[in-house]
Amino acid sequence: MLIKKPSDIKSSEITPKEIYLHRRKFLLGVTGWTATVALGLMASRSVSAAGNGDSRAKLEGMRKSPLSTDEPLNSYKQITTYNNFYELGTEKDSPARNAKYLVTRPWTVAVEGEVKRPKVYDIDAFMKLSPPEERIYRLRCVEAWSMVIPWVGFPLSALIKQAEPTSNAKYVEFTTLYDPKRMPGQRRAVLDWPYVEGLRMDEAMHPLTILAVGLYGEILPAQNGAPLRLVVPWKYGFKSIKSIVRIRFVAKQPLTAWVKSASHEYGFYSNVNPEVDHPRWSQARERRIGELFKRKTLMFNGYADQVANLYQGMDLKINF
Ligand SMILES: Nc1nc2c(c(=O)[nH]1)N[C@H]1C(S)=C(S)[C@@H](COP(=O)(O)O)O[C@H]1N2
Ligand SMILES: [Mo]
Image: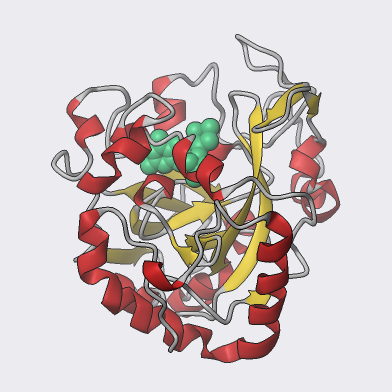
């Protein structure tokens, strides 16, 4: 059986981390490449489950990634109940409470713009584009807290290679679903909906940049951006846009939702940088969710060795 129902599995919030890690090693070691198939089957099975808001469909066979951090993980409960997802409400616990509204089937992802092979994918086909990996990344929110999250996903570069961008493509623009029925937070003008984010092409192609479809070995819960979200670990969390319906290749730097709403506070790059404060608070330190004392924030969220070269010659105080 590739798919386990919730009743067959111990939920990771009650599984001690050591056991989870052990089980993970086992799964990663044994099953290997059946993952793509598992994902596809899982995705079709989850059609009904996705609607009732409590699906815990298991993904198996993920490959382990050398790009993962070995820091202690935040718990499944922390990761799924302390969220920023304004389309599902602005309190930290509202995305989990409103998750039931975000029905994720049917769902399509349009890949378009400056590409030789534009395509509208059904989400289940999209998830089979590339074998999923487990990627344990730090996530640093601009609000000066952080978590360590075991994502499941594949490099954005795999999609980009399939789409074959033209030489005009300099940036990638991502757009979240606009549907106030499924995203009740969009009934209030908190942001100019839909949420839009963007990356420069070299950032999008970087091996650390992934499209996530799961976490803790299970399909992504709605509150974490189901069915598909971006994860860019060296940037503030808001760059990691959730519930994507469109990926567009463009010549000009996209006008992102946060730059549009407050360009003096949020820049296009938004690289984690302890030396550049937010106008209203310091970015020098952060609170790891679950810990008592603050820790120092690291340049590029600790990924400087891998990404600093992308910004050589740029003034990161101007390009914040
Ligand atoms: N569409 C959309 N994507 C979003 C957000 C949002 O409000 N809407 N919040 C961002 C912010 S501020 C953070 S910190 C991360 C949080 O991701 P998580 O809830 O999975 O930890 O999602 C980001 N992606
Ligand atoms: Mo954030």
